[in-house]
Amino acid sequence: MTLSKKAVMIAFILFCSSFVQLLIYPSLIFVNSDTVIENEEPFIVGFSEDILISTNDGDYVHHVEPTLAINSDGKIFAGWKNADGHNTGGVRVSFSRSDNNGKTWTTPYNMPMFEGIFTGQSDPWLALYQDTIYYAYLEYSRAITSDLSQITLAKSDDYGYTWSTVSATNGAGFADKETMTIDSLGNIYVAYDDILINGTVIVRITRSINEGESFQERGIIADSRIHPIDHVGPYVTTNSENDVFVAWTWITTDYWGDIYITNSTDHGATFETKLDVNPTSENGTFTVDQTGRPKEVTLPVIRFDSNDRLYILWSELIDPDGSWGIFLRYSDDNGLTWSSRYTINQIINGNQWQPDMDIDSQGRLHISYYDQQGNSYGPYYRMAYFSSYSSTELIITDAKPIASENTSTVYTRPGDYFTIRVDSDDIPHVVWTDGRNEEMDIFYSHGITAGLSPLQKGLAIGIPISAIVI
Ligand SMILES: [Ca+2]
Ligand SMILES: [Ca+2]
Ligand SMILES: [Ca+2]
Image (cartoon, rainbow, N blue to C red):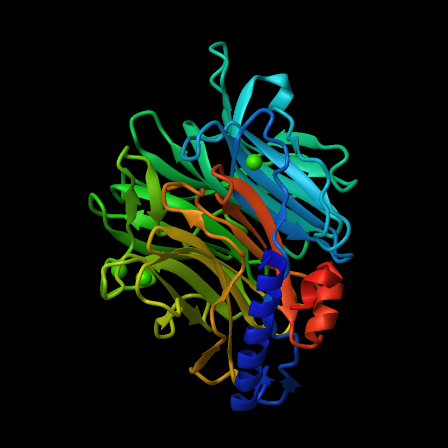
């Protein structure tokens, strides 16, 4: 059976099971007590054929840690990190674009090095504001004559044909693990770890109020000299009032800590007292491989829906079988109090980690994560939503494989994240790290809806007609 045939069969089986779910659950979402809108399609029944987008192995064989952004016209932009080894540090970051809903992608190229300095690059992060692409990435000097370390912000007004770059940070140490968000007015925030040479970690946030022409230091979110022993992975977002929220992992003992969150009502100048998202236990941690290189790590993802409900998603090493699992909470009071914990992984056994989510126009969560069973892993997808806004019962669709092949657990370091984003039609698009060809590559796929017949689905996503006749 060809891969395409297998994908179509899986899509059809998932179509049938999803139809049963449609019958079971009334598809209404209550936005507030007065407003009722239908929770309409699209329901995602499977994923389109996998497309390889890291097509250039000439300089670097391994490609990991992809990021994704989609504009209102459906142009898709992807970035990722290139490395010499499957589990080694980043050397350059790349960019590619699709103008035809992911069917084909432009030839990837490496992003510019800041002011011509010979740098290494890592930690790619894409965001859009209107039709301008903002691409944040870590840069560190590889020349002995420079000690440059910063988050660079590259900006393109022409879909990635040309870029201008600016330094988005000015910390004292190694700038690491940034995230970026852009508020409704176009102000750009970059949160990152500033790692000093003595091991102190200061989590900082910077802001640009001039469309990325320059950045100013704003506030300090965490400092390991005051709150030992380590802080990692600040994830920044804003609500409808353009207040700034940051969640991150605070490691409080050698191996354990938890997710903390704080917010700022003065655009990042000062932050409220941080709150433990799981106050009764310490569940955040990290694991390393046999050579001491990082594998799974607890890192939060935070997003607001259009009603300012705040969702937080993360992975923990506390499933009953001692494995990693994925959890969700929400808050309707800007993070002061939190809902019960919801388990997101459908299968408890094995490791589920590295979750990401996006929220569509109907307030539904589109969630992706890796699931390892036995000696291989791959990306999976679930959609989650509440039957009404006051309901605490999370409806969550069956886990669906995104990729048609898995990656061997020999490849221990797919990066710290992969990315899911919904387009203007509420369709999820995913980029992930994939080792099916005995090297790490970046693949892409998008959701297929139940609204199309299996034949139409095949035609709509470009599967050859011969593959549909099973
Ligand atoms: Ca805790
Ligand atoms: Ca598990
Ligand atoms: Ca390759």
